[in-house]
Length: 250
Ligand code: ADP
Image 1 (spheres, helix red, strand yellow):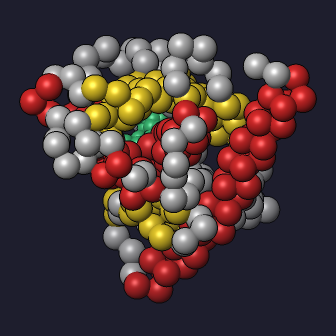
Image 2: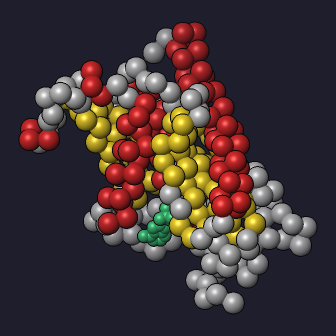
């Protein structure tokens, strides 16, 4: 048996083949999305994906600070992903660590392809992401939230970006890993994916663990299927915000 943290389950599937939270292998966790949650940002969104609670606020296009980062031929996208001290079981240090810096960069690269940054020379679009509660798959849920914050800002975009993770545990592919599944070690892999859903283009694909080519293809199919579910929720949330504005005014 692998060494598991205290409180970690000993089995990852129930006797009836379902996951410990009752989901089928290809089920998403519950998803609730709200647009325009921050009065003081140009665009914002909150994504509650499973137990993850994530807020993204977007600003711009605006002048770049510090000035030496400005590029005369294009705008830039700057992303800051942070986990709050109370987002995980152990109090997380408020000082941003290597993981947060890496995830900020990964999210930036996942979102850049949908923006027309070349139209905003010397300017920046800034996205600040706060993870209030983390429960596995926060980089994907952050991408889902950040793309919506950009859309809420009202700048032209080629597409939305939708994030979802797939993985395998006990050598079985599963969609949308919760934290306890993400931390399972036996026959495990974790593959966060971000997709431009209209064009079916992948803007992020990371893989932690070992998978064969067949497994990889099955996991990718599962990720696209899962992303479709998240994409529908993103569109529904946008629709809801804008129809309520037309009916009720700002
Ligand atoms: P992701 O959240 O994108 O899956 P990781 O694979 O790095 O990113 O992390 C998986 C999960 O591990 C997170 O969602 C979170 O629940 C937990 N986690 C991450 N960092 C910490 C930390 N510093 N302390 C405790 N748990 C953490």
